[in-house]
Amino acid sequence: MESMKRTMKITVNFSVVLLLLAIGFDLSAGATKQWTRDVGYNNAANWDVGRVPCAQDKVIFTDQTSVVFLQVNGTMREVVLPTNGEVVLANTMTIAFSDYSDVDPQCNGQDVTFIADTPKHWFDPDNWKDPASPVTVETELVPCRYDDVSFPEDNLFSVALNESVSVRSIQISGQSYNGPNIASYLNTPNGKLQFAVDDSVTIGILGYDCPDSTGCQCGNDEKQQTMDMICSMASCYPLMCQNPVTPEGACCAKCGAILTMDFEHSSFNMNQFKQWIKTNYGGTVNLNKRATKRQADSSVESNIIFYISKTKSEMIQLVITETGSGSGKSAVQMAQRIQRDLRSGMASLGIKSVSMQASSQGTGGHTGSAGSVSSGGIAGIIIVVCIVIALAATAIFMYARRISFRKDDPLHADIEMTPTHLQPEYIQELPIDPNGVKGFDNPIYATSPLPSKDGSPMYADPTKADQHQANGQQQVNGHQRNGSYEKNSYDHESAANGLENMEQRDSTIVGLAFTNPMQSDTKT
Image (cartoon, rainbow, N blue to C red; front, top):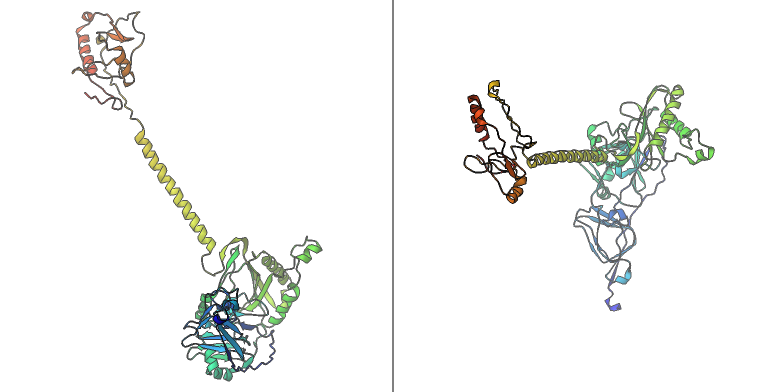
């Protein structure tokens, strides 16, 4: 088995000079924004499989890879290098190649691709963080003009910049740069390796704090083009509230509240106001006055986030939100308390007025994208459309069934007898035999079919057809009763001439053959 083992070890000595300078930042003057992306080999987020390659993996660096930093020892089965990219090795780093499975029994071996292959954009808010506190306004998460900017000290990075920017200070690999130095650095091989800067684009270093005691605007939303670029790359997440609010300068809506304040330029101080918020509301806050002390101690609002800034419209904006996926209820309660306290002591803080916007409590569905349709709204629209379609389909089905029912209904024929308007002298009461019939058969459904002029049955009840065939048809010149005819005797000769005319008319009427179209096919 030892003969099958093939191992190759490469040791590379690569000198990297890092100047580690301890620089103190005055956080009260401006925020510190740290770059969060790197091109490190040992960063699991930089690989398509979500882990660092193991011994039996085939490591692939695509041609789009501009730079990768190998800072730890590693073993791999095979490596594919980029055509034009650069692989930077840390000092005294060792790379081993082996196809022997016992080197790492837990590694199944697969193709692993490096995905941090393109520079990350400066104006993408997801690439920055404020180590002191979360920033809830996306355009202000990207470094503002009075912010300090810090890039990783123990790793390499790749930044794309297509628009000139200005910051208070910048630190790269632990070294601080001023205006002329940063321009020179961007033209060095390392500078070109880590900054993909368009022509005529500059990084300005101001070197001083905000000169206005009432605070300074961030500046990233002054140009609509810049704000649109930031918001196009910002990530907005689903919210657990109804009617979320969108702060000025933000790309995403929030669950919580916004307090907007007008102020006296002569007496308001931004740093003092921040300290007032931290002192009075940054610790334990009992939002329920009826709660016991133990309940109050357990209701520490550590999940509430305060973010204060001056907006482009020259107003002081206090954004109150919650960490995680909270509904914003606690943040709204906090905002209501702060608003009450401000109104009772505004003059001492230099505030002239305060107004509040707040989200409403609800369950989910909203996406925190300002001006966009939420996923819950889309789902609601889909549900409504489905209901409308279902109702329409039901109505069409019922209408079709109604027509079908009408087709299946039997036809009804009504006979309307026109009055004869006979004169009294033509009417004669016929003698009635006491032993004769007490009733009459329906002429439409005669007990026995009567002959028409051509000898065929004139009308008959189809329900009694079998009975007629069984009993035989006995023809007499009178009326039929119980299968036989009983003659009603009366003297026709005693009738007047007018009566003869009436009989002829009646004979004509009786001679008209009628057949129910639903019962017989015979027509005369």
